[in-house]
Image 1 (cartoon, rainbow, N blue to C red):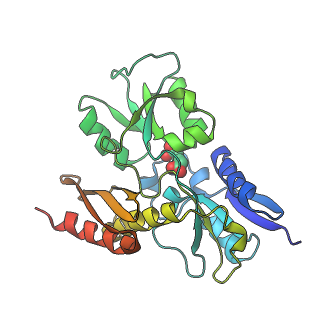
Image 2 (spheres, rainbow, N blue to C red; image 1 turned 90 degrees about the horizontal axis):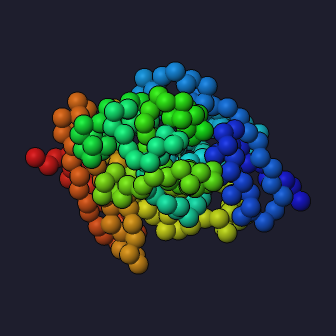
Length: 287
Ligand SMILES: NCc1[nH]cc(CCC(=O)O)c1CC(=O)O
């Protein structure tokens, strides 16, 4: 039997996520890991480096070249548009979607005399609403690197995705969770996505693929894609299903960050993409 090759970044979290896919594929499967631009440039924030798909380009190339059969990504890190011929072919069941607060080792409560580190403008804007007096500073690097910077004393606390901490076995470091009402997650947060080549055989992924996560992801990514329009304003989106009814929550931020709006829309899950477009237009046009 032919061995399936799964491409992944080489960070510990990426490898754990790729192993989740491998464990669900009922045929021999091998991991091929590589570094991406986003892993190599660590002295600037992602906004400063600019460009899209910093964590996927090298893997896209390997996939297109046939060096691997599928690639595995945190859906949150994937651009809203897939390159021609390289569609997302499976979405994992969603893990805990919430962001979480991690304190510097030894601290028992949040100490606002030190900065809170977070890696995205989405988190910064929402944290500022929760803790108006906090000093919020950017932090880069993979989860372990960020935790090292925290424990070395550069920050008093960090905000990280609960899903990543859980997958790394670091849930013991979570001081408290932020409900989606407090910090609305990023589109695709806590979902692992598999990308393939157009026309390839997907039967090996049927035990892995989750249709509910897929429909939520389609709505969240459609919202984000519609708002994106070439700029890099922060966006948050979270969809949930109640039977076949989909409820999409979104956050829109104007480019100069003077306007921050939250809203929701709902409808049948079969309309996931249209609901994302509708909510984006609703929030952009509201006054
Ligand atoms: N941008 C890094 C990244 N990409 C996915 C996750 C967490 C796992 C997930 O959301 O699926 C993280 C770490 C974090 O944001 O704390």
